[in-house]
Length: 381
View (cartoon, rainbow, N blue to C red):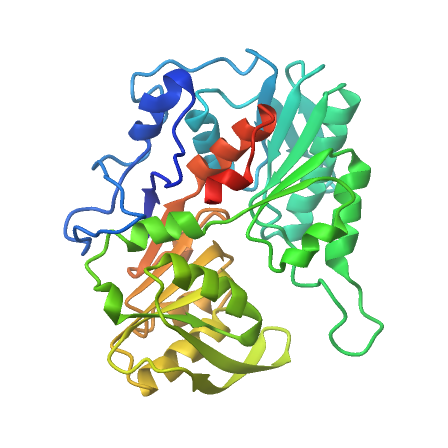
């Protein structure tokens, strides 16, 4: 079974005022015997041994959602993450009614006033992407018509992000731009997204975008493991991910970098050609923004083992895990597969090597800073 792990983030992500105790209450680790060691380095943190719990279970007071001018609502895509974010901020989620008619049409009604408020809607557009995207758009429209002061679409996983350019000569949709237009036209004033597939997608929006990264959460967890920094090699699964892997390697004790030369034959189809770099006798850490069918990381892991890697870890922010991802990731090639909960991991997608880290503190801190007109980029400095 996968284990949900709440990480205390680096970069001075302290709670706000009376919420500091609440943030400590959300920290947790894997069960005893899961192989976590003392760890060291800039991203090391202290962990408690309790699983994430709501503030009520911790005996801490919750601020009602009607206090102040900040409101957080959740769609149906990932309500657990939204609840954790609200818990970090010491709030309750706003009351909203979401239902489907017999023909599949969606109905959204806010059940509390948002007039003059800063509203944050937590709704990743993960599978089923079309359903969750439409739900987000209708929620935005409901908030706009209810006279919200500002509406921020918190999209931990941005669907259609891979359709960000024409790949095969023409007559293709750039769906990432289309979705950006839909969110803007629905009435959103700002978007908060986590690890977009490509950074240039920010430019598709005609409204401000706060782009946050799941790397600090994963780095914090890796630093707690008993792995000698000199034995680690960070691996980019393709040429397009080199910048992401280089940034990860720099923060992971400036580890060396290797690159898998991959040739894509079609959507969800790729072929590994060869490896650039040396991984013999090393612990290889594959870094990617998402794992969909796991074809890329699976073929990369096979190549790394052939090249003499001692162990292979896979790290990704978004665990989409479309079939046959679970079969590939649980095949024995990976020592551990580390992902975050930007996309909910369902029971049938769990396997022993899977570790799920929570990005609730990261999103909660970012939401507070946006609401309070503070710097977001300083979180990652």
